Length: 329
Image (cartoon, rainbow, N blue to C red; front, side, top):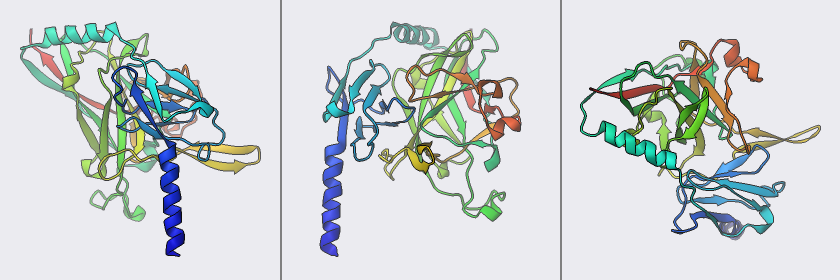
């Protein structure tokens, strides 16, 4: 029995080694963290912090093409038959990002400020929550309420924690289910009412666990992002579960179920859940499919074809909180 077990472990080790593909910068040859690998059918995976992902025909037998993209790089398309152990992306310089950041630094440098906060909307009710998948990115719009110069300093993402004991789930002092999940955050300009240009100067990720409580507070002041006159979008995308050290686990991100018409792929739901609210006026929450080429943002409402119990209850916004540094004249 021990001999068979050793052979299995050896086989899995060899399979994993051969399946590892590294995404790197074409000039520096350094790894590109958290690149997206789209399969062209609405599904995909994400590379880890070392730019590594696992792909074999054994795991993904029906995939013939991959589309690799990352912040600040040109997307490439490659046949699954021509995959090598290393893939290289070319940088795509954004003049807008450079100008925007330089103006931000010049305006905010050495100025005094006070902090203004928009609180996150919290809720631990399972039935009032969005079930996050890596296929979907959620963006929330924040309008600019005045002409004061302000910088985004912290973002507070609300999470719903689930009780280990379902019968006592409404008791706040009950022990919560554990999780360790990696999220990616993007900041977008407002382009005619929808998320536009990405203002991130680097990939922003954070690991959340049940120990963080009802929300995770992310400090982004070093990104030096000013509030534009026409508002801004802040988005959240789950990347998957992590090990105890915070490293992204290479598990499959969807389930395959046999149906009458063939195999149906269902996105895996990750914890924590994202509580939605009816306390925010208007429809400020937008959703897009990450792994569809040419993907478009859509307002989260029934008019756009979303069939959700959240909308039936009037819960159409994810209640992200934000802290602003408001500078004195």
